[in-house]
Length: 170
Image: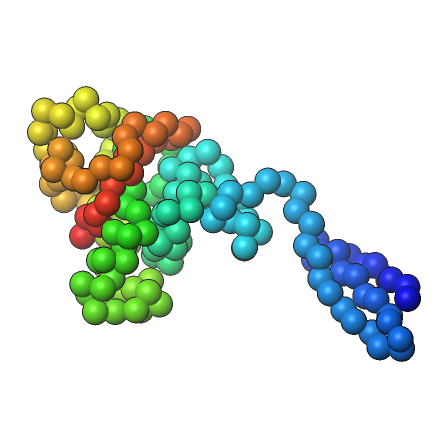
């Protein structure tokens, strides 16, 4: 048995010849650390709102929706912004309520607005929301976050304050 190695598009390819039969396997070696959401696709993320959403295991549907809608720049823009990040359970319930599959959801008309409904310009903290104040998303939608079911508040990243919520702001 012997092995041949070559480099193809950043992946190490190892070919083995065993008993006159060639077996080929691909071993992908990462040169940089990736978040949970980026491992499969080999993508790395910054410490911004989009990166945090994509790296968090429970927020893959929101990350997929943002990417599919072409709205990554909204979540990577220079801040400060506030993001109300809906978890996968919330997106699952929302998708079910619309009577569509996940694949149909990421192709849905208005997906960009749904994503942007989760973003407010400026910093909104848990203390700001406690008073029951109304805020306006970048789409112009009025929201009262004090009424939202929260999982975690005031998560700081380079360009944003993120609040993890259990609902989709449609």
